[in-house]
Image (cartoon, rainbow over all chains, first blue to last red; front, side, top):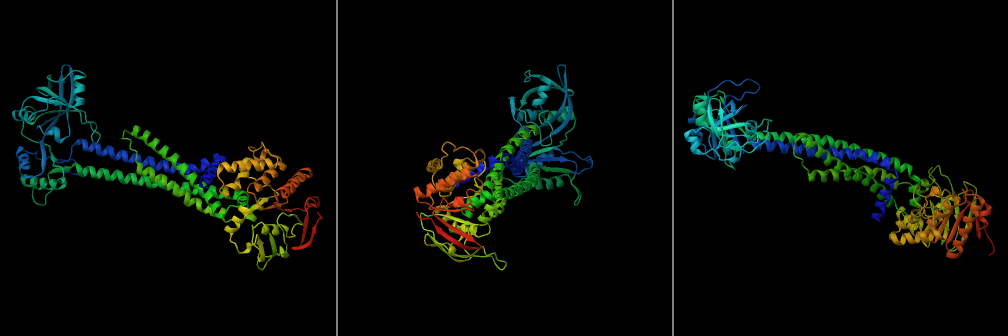
Length: 401
Length: 224
C-alpha cells in the first residue's frame, strides 16, 4: 500500500512537472543554501586553523614594544640574550626557544638581486616555526655557537635567486657578508595573515648580530610550549618574568608583547564558526519559506482535485488513506527538493572553495540535518492540506465542479 | 440486502430530502429509481451506497446497521461490497483506463500483478480490450462510462449503484450501457440500482421505484 501511495504521489508530481519543480524550488534553494554555506564556512575555518598552525605549533611570540591597538608602537628596548637565558632557566614546560633578530636585506647571487627578510636565530627555530628542510643539512648547534657564515633559504627566496639551479654549497652575499647556502626549506604557504612564509633567509644569530646588525640585541623570541601544557599559563609566567627583568614599574603597561598562537587560533575559529552558524540560520529561514510554498500549492491542488478525492472516497478510500496520499505527495516534493538541494549545495560549495582557495569540506551531519529538515517540512506543511482533503464530504466532493 | 426506514433532514432549517421511506431490495435484483430532481432519489442513493448515514430510521446492509457505523467503517463497506458509476464518469484525468480500473483494487490491497490481471479482465468484459493504455480524454463518452463500469466491477461488488449513468450519453450509447448493466445483473448476479429520469432506461429493469417529494410514489415490478 505504501509503495502504491508513493508511486501515485510520484505520478502526480510528474503530471504537473512545471508546477512541482517551482514548488520544490523553495526547498531546493533552502537546502542548497544551508549545505553550501555551512560547507564553505567549515572550509574557511579549516583553512584559517591550518595556516595559523603552520606559523608554529603551540607557539608564543614575545616581542618588544607595547601591544597598542591602532597606534604606532613606541620604540622600546630590545631583549638581550640574558632575557632568553632567564626564560630558558625559569619557565618550565618549554619545548624549545628561539631568539631572533631580523632585518629586510638585499641578497645577491651572480647577477640576481632579491630583497628578503633575514633572520638570525638558533637551531631550534626551524622546529618552533614548523619549517622543514627540503634538502641540504639543517643548521647545527655548532654553527650557531661559533657563528659561521652559513644560511638556509626559504623556497621562494631560493627560486628567486637560483631558479631551478642547485643552491647547496653556493655562496650568496647577504648585505656585506658572503654566506654559504647549506639548506633549502620546504614551502609552507601563506601564513594566517596572507604573508609569504617562504621568503626568508635563516642564519646563526651570532653571525647576524656580529656581522650584520652590529649589536647583541634580540628582537622577537619564539617559544614552543610542551604539548599538554596550557600556553596561557606559560604566557602569564613569561609576562611576569619579563616585567621583572625589564624592571617595569608596577601598574605601568608592558613594554613588550606576548602573543599566544593557540589563543589567536581559538579566536579566529570561534569567529568563523559564529559566522557560519549565522549564515546557516539565515538560509534555514528560506527553507521554511519553501515549506510554506509547498503548503500553498498543496492547498490549491486539493481544491482542484476535489472531484478526484470524492471518487476515491466513494470507491472505498478511507479518510486516512486520502490524508496519507496528500501527505506523501508533500513529503515527496520536499525530500526531492532536499535531494536536489544537497547536490546543488555540495556542488556549489565545491566550486566556491576552488574559487576562494579554501579546502573543500563535505559536512555529512549538515547534509543529513538539512535533508531530514526538508522531510519534516513536508510533513508539517503538508498536513494541513492533506487533512482538508481527508475531511471532505464524499457527496459534496463528487458534486464539486 | 434489506432496506428499512430512512428519514433525512438537516437541523432546524431542514430539508426533508427523504420523508420516511421503506424499501427492501433483495440480492440479485435490478431496480430503477425514478423521479424528478429534488424528489430524494439521489439522497436515497447516497444512503444506500453508504456515502451518507440516515438522520433517523434504520438502514440495514447485509444485516449491518449502517447508521451505527463511522465514516471509516462505511468506507470499508463501500470498498468491499459496493461499486459506483456516476453521471460524470469521474475517471482520474491523465490516467490510463487500466490504472483507473485498478484504483479500487489498490485500496483493497490487491497485489500489483493480480490487480493488472483483474483490471484487464474487467475492461475486456465491458468491451474495451486493447484500450487499456488510453487516457480518458482519448476515449468517447460511452467508452469512458464503460471504463467507469469496469472500475466498479473490478472489485467484485455485490451492489452496483449507477447515478444517471446515461445522463451524458446519446440514446444509442445509453442503450449499450444499460444492456451492459443488465448483462452484469444476469450473468454475475450483481444487484444493480440505477437512478434515471428517462423511462426508456427504466424499461431495462425488472423493478421501478418512483420517488416524489421524499416519498415513494410507486413500486412496480415487471412480470418476469
